[in-house]
Image (cartoon, rainbow over all chains, first blue to last red; front, side):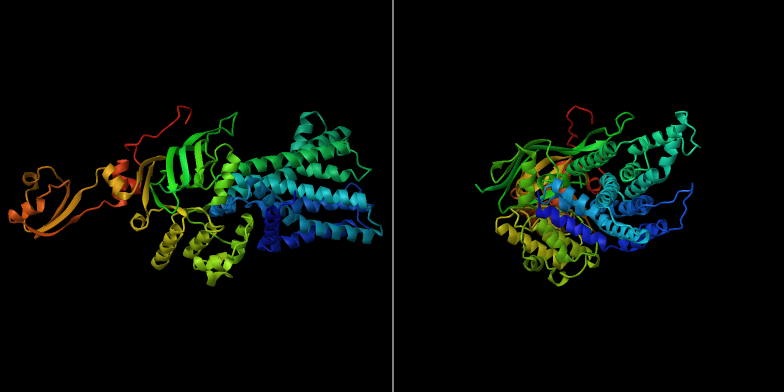
Length: 275
Length: 341
């Protein structure tokens, strides 16, 4: 299973991306959005809109996950958008494809390398955020819940990275791939609420009513069709207070589908790609 | 008979051109490529691959480098047929062939040495980086970043990577681009040395003048088909461009139409005091005949066509067409397989 060629590709990409100028620009944003948000949401006097007051570590981390959705995924897109297209544009891809290392191994190395490059800083900050919340709330970590939140964070970053890389295999210029990555991020981060509202309205649900059970059910279902939604479903498995009518097994199945299908698509693109 | 490093038989590869439809956005059709190519490359031979823009030179090199999977045909590497499995064919080609693509724009903060090591890892080989960089003249730049390299140095880096793992076959796409004359000479010398060690080399180059002294054989390619293959002398004979002399003289140009029994004047220049002409298939006693008639001949020599002339003759294109645009009036038809193109 362990392949030294794949491992060295991963190591090289991670090292290259972690020391890149982009990462230096993105780190302050990530720090502000992940531990920063966690610190704020863990404030004992905080009162969120709707009179919500997060009380447990996982509840605070659930709200902190917005930092991952807004900053982590965007940074993932910005790291991976030129993962293939830059090499293709410069002619380096042709040199790489003419090496004996199988394309399948190259694609594993590229995907995992880019994923780890964003996962390492985000996981580190997520851990810091969790410890900060525990400190402020005076609670201890529940290992199983924490592990599942880490897995959810890893998965959402993987989905965005892999979609950006797929876009990168199609594009012949940098503009197209970044437009695709940012466009996808924009759709699922901002426009999905609009899509949900339209579907709910078309189904005869009063979209203005926040606690309408029908609206919550439709939202819960439509969220399975969005990576951000699945991410929140996964985090919600740790929160007994929230029930949107989607069983945890369905959330994990959706996560598996969101992981496997793009992965297969990326692999197939890499097998057929022309320099 | 010399050993064949690689032989391709009836090899076809066609690019897929996207033609999205409303209900089938991924739909594509067969586009240009290479068609039923046959040729053999002997160990230690240097072949010049020449053709107009879009002829299929780079496609052919990519097929030989194991990048493009062939649609049909047979590839024999060292006499072994590898066409049964496209996976093993690709892997064997990539393991045995060193490929230097045209104009790779190496960039980034990695050093030359790190880049070499990266590709060595991709080949699962331990490479003597020092020796390799010395061979291509990049030793002094081993710790320079890729961003600091000039175009010529980037070419040398591409060459170093192509030479990794002692390939049996070396494919060089425009290897002299961006090289200064001294560096170009040194690359030429290195190519000859590699060939003398048995490495089979294919050079695709637009700098055709430089190729004449370097190559053993020429492969003329046009519209994805080989239109001539052999030594320059053989191709000259096949195309009827052999047996030509260039004559220069003083005074009035001789009336060749009455003097020549068999030959044909194919080119002539008349100046105020002298003249020059090229005659194909001249009579055996032409010079004596001209002198006997009182014409002052200052120079005569065998006229060999250059590669551009061979290419023009073989493709039926004018020089301007070869250099600028491909006209539809060429001799070789665009092959198709009868299906949607």
